[in-house]
Picture: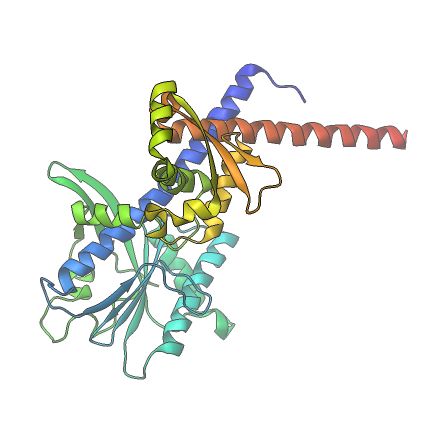
Length: 357
């Protein structure tokens, strides 16, 4: 299968845009959850503007095999299980998305005390909150009891808004079939105090600022409770770790020559302060290293145990946008792989046709 240089360039460009969109969507998820966490802590944390009712905001909860994006617990006995889906999907994928939400409601119901309130909060982009509500409504009337939500599902749309006075996320709850209000009582210790219904449901919109504290949370926790794309992990975790692993002699060599071959292992990367503070699953880092090998940015050292890799650090490369550079290498690699697979399939089909003659 032969294609023209223009067609190859078009394919590479399309694949690069898809990789960058995947990166951006994950990054957006981190910022949304970090901003929501900062807002909750500002309102109900130890020095809360309303009341110090927040006990814990867990960014990486493990809930009997389920992994929502956060689980917040309050001294009022209320729990809020949050999941962020940038786009609520349609078709078969919609069933998978709503099944995930149903599983969260059942977990909260099973693990809640009899008189405690608990809600699932679904954060979706404002252009798909109606699809999410329709899917939840359909699930509530499903013939199979195990497919029905076992508690409130509060669907809140969000939209990124850049203003003259900074960045914000606007939260919008819409009164539509399938959407619930927050349970009462929730975060407020007494009637009349600001709670999630008064601030989000009953208000035209709720603006959450992407302030420095939220950005600090994003920097210190650049992950959400879903596995990031390998490109994101490589740029966010692996390259900062490589910088921390450089010795003074290696820094001098890199500065003088402009190029350095650095030998590293996954465990060495995991042990650096910038990565160990986040404590990601080792598999995330391993898949990022595999990705770097695939795009020929790293080379595995044969026979090394534990496995080690040689990474080429180039001053000229490092001064450029890593997302564009690694993304383009990945796009070219993916397109080349796809074309090879198609050529092999075409040759197999041709041989099969000759056998039938």
